[in-house]
Image (cartoon, rainbow, N blue to C red; front, side):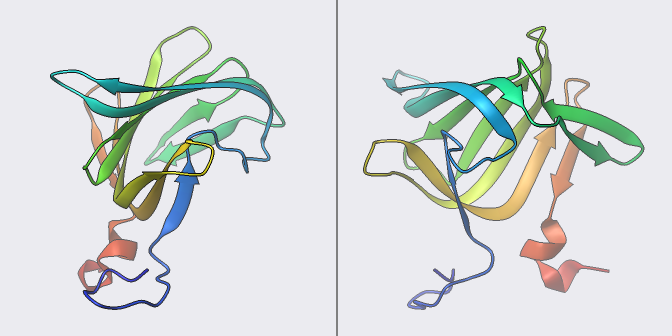
Amino acid sequence: MCLKRGCRRECRLLKRKHGDRADWKRVLEKRYAQAELATETFAGHLSLLSIVKVSEPLCVSYGDSKLCIADDGYLWLQQFPSGKRHSVTTMFDSEGRIVQWYIDICQTIGLNEDNVPWIDDLFLDIVVLPSGETIQKDASDFFPQLAI
């Protein structure tokens, strides 16, 4: 759905992403768990994707650096806060070290018929590395008028 008030057409800025990543073909074997949590500091759903086996590692480039974000033994802890317009995925390597925090800016968060959390991703993302470096991704897709 388009972001403009009253518009009902599909918008290329949205992609539905499910917490269990059921459509992720790279992941050959996984374990998945989720829970609903309501505390003073967080209310929403948490999911843990344990990546047992991949067909090939997923690596991304940030400037001159290349970073592996999905491989055998990696964990993705995903937070889907209720009533918010973002989700946070903390990615851990096979040694339990944080690889990155990936923040998806989304239009909405919901649950499918199996109670698996999902987001309608707006393709505007923020990456935070353990060093503290922050990377804004896909801003030119979200705000094309700002592209140079």
